[in-house]
Length: 215
Image (cartoon, rainbow, N blue to C red):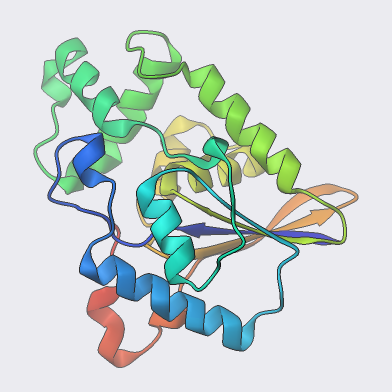
C-alpha cells in the first residue's frame, strides 16, 4: 500500500485582494510551517518523494518544513480564486464577497458558474479537475510515500473526487481546511482511501490555539 500526504500551505497574506499580493506567507505562516516540519521529522516516516506547487506560499511552506529536495509541479497550484471572484462580481453582483465568512456560499456559487462556463478564469473548470486528477494519479504510487505541499482547493477537489461529492458538498469540506493541515490518502488495490482529513498535530497545544487559521 502507498500513501499520499497532502499539506496545505501556511497562512498567506490574508489582507490581500489579488493573487500576486496573497502569494506569500505571513510571519505566522512561516512559524506554522516550521512547527509542522519539526513534528513530521520527529513523528513521521521518511517520504520517497516530495512535491510542491510552483506558488511562492507553497514553496516557502515546503522549505520551512525543512525539505530541500522538492520537485515543483504546477498541477498542485491553487485555483486562481481572486480572478474568479472578480469575474463573479460582474456576472452575479449579488454574490459579491464582503468578508471571509461569505466563502461558504460564494465558493459553490463561483465554482458552479465556472463549471457552467459563465465565468472563464485562467483555466476551464474541466482543466482544473483534470490536472488535479492527473497529479493525484502520479502521486498514487504503490508501496511509496509521497508528500505534496499544495493548497485548500486542490485538497478539497482531491477528497471530493474520492468521496463522490458535488460542488456544494466540496465547499463544505473546503471551508474548514486549516493552514498547514495534513491529509492522508491510502493507495490500495481497490482505489484511493481517505484516511486522515484536516489533521494538525503540530498545533495541538494550548498555547497554539490562535495559530489554527483557515485564511
